[in-house]
Length: 110
Image 1 (cartoon, rainbow, N blue to C red):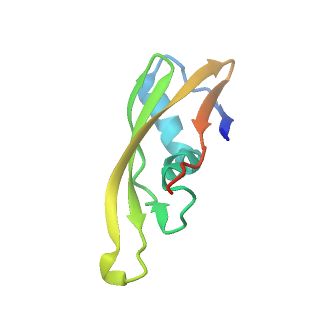
Image 2 (cartoon, rainbow, N blue to C red; image 1 turned 60 degrees about the horizontal axis):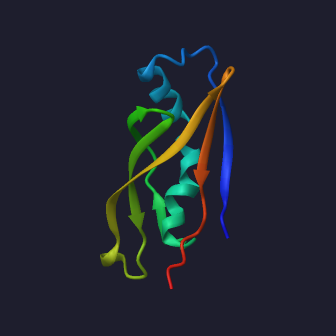
């Protein structure tokens, strides 16, 4: 079952033509991306996005690309791990808002 969600992010006066400023808006709302990023792990609570590591790597043609670090909390502390994750999402500008579309469908890991 698909779980695509739309989020509304206010531009608050940010120029939609200024990619540097748009990047900052997306990064300020990085928490919205967590569900889409973590969906690849099937809802497994041992995975978490490392706070402060989300960054936008590109903006073009209504698509935002990003990267972040993921922390894996293993049952044995010596098996904990950190690794990079990346992804992309579609967005559109609608008036004074960004409409961000994120696929939060949990992947079947079985």
